Amino acid sequence: MKRVAFWFMLMLVGTLVLGACSSDSADKESNKEKNNKEVVATVNGENIASEEYQKELEATKAMYTQQGVDFKEIDGEMKKQVEQSVLDQLINTKLVLQSAENDGISVGQKEIDAEIGNVKGQFEDDKQYQAALKENKITEEELTQQVRQQLIITQYLDKNIGDVKVSEDEVKLVYDQYKEQAESMKQEVKDFETMKPELEQQAIAQKKNEEVSKHIEDLRAKNEKNIEILL
Image 1 (cartoon, rainbow, N blue to C red):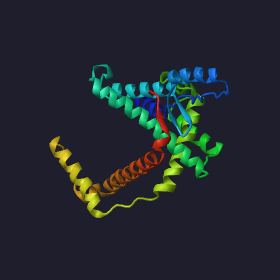
Image 2 (cartoon, helix red, strand yellow):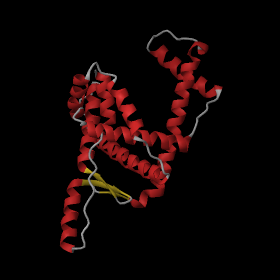
Image 3 (cartoon, rainbow, N blue to C red):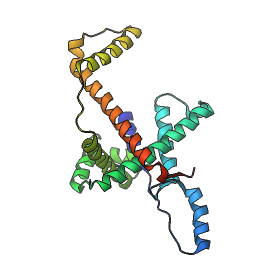
Image 4 (spheres, one colour):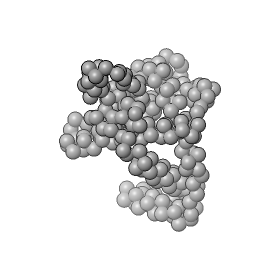
């Protein structure tokens, strides 16, 4: 059940709140004061709601708790880093979704329903599924929206990153890391050939993460002037 709950927290998303515009100067000032309370950042004119940020932050704190870390006990500097990381993640997600829309990437309802079906399949029945939603403070509508976004992001990254291949040396480097860790924990070290298929997947995942990070950094650099932090 914890594994499923953790999945829900990773998928957690808040409702996007867009600020209203008005030609009246008094309304503009009123909206400005309102946005300062309700919006933490804008990305190319699109708002990131404070509600969304707080919800994602609470999910992150819950993940720390599941890993045995009391968020209340970590020092102030670490808390600031976590808060900044959550905000950066929301900004980066917004940038990717905007770029995906510009690329004409979209997903159909059948794809979304299939993924939701996979989620429900992890539970014995609908009652248990609904209980997990309640436990993780997420509605089915929010879950559906996040699934849609995740599918779009996956398609976008597949298009822009593509297939990643690794060399034998890169696989051996992962093996050396595994071997060092296993020896430090006094565990049995399996030979390279036995571990190779698994090691290749790890090496590919690591390299793809690096490519994704680089792509995100490029997006941030290109759009930095259009990102406003209000937090």
